[in-house]
Length: 183
Figure 1 (tube, one colour):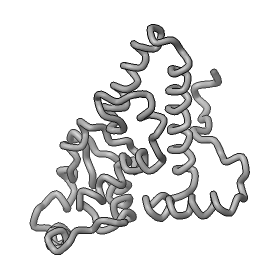
Figure 2 (figure 1 turned 90 degrees about the vertical axis):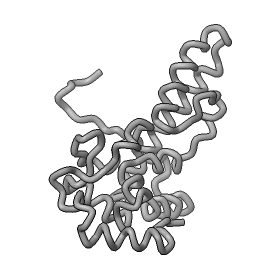
Figure 3 (figure 1 turned 120 degrees about the vertical axis):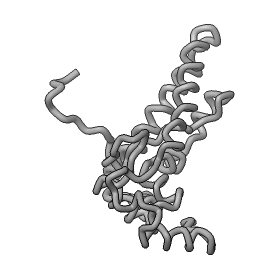
């Protein structure tokens, strides 16, 4: 179990650290989602790996043994926004790293049009301008739940909470002109 006072790694590193193909794929994901370093990417990959491992373990059980556990796992992942309410274990096995990265707070702030870029979204979060359910969020990697999507907004003390702020007006004009979606 380990000492609760001591931090432990929340990710696993790649087995082959200098694989050129994997290296280029990781760099594309870092740029596409505005990640600070590969540790954030590896953390998401580890989380995805553990979800898949759980699903494979449930598939190995008999139907009667896995019924309750399968329902709980799918319910949890539905609340996280990763699978549909009527999803199956096969849906869990087909999840990709992009599915997890799209649920990050940083990505949500950008996709909602609250920031001009992913890096600006990260800065807004780190500086305490973003809130969920009225609580200030300072973690760009926070996993946004389905219930949290509706309450995502600027904090009350943030200057950006004012609809007349020049940055908000500029972003509204850009949204009308064609949006700020990244391919």
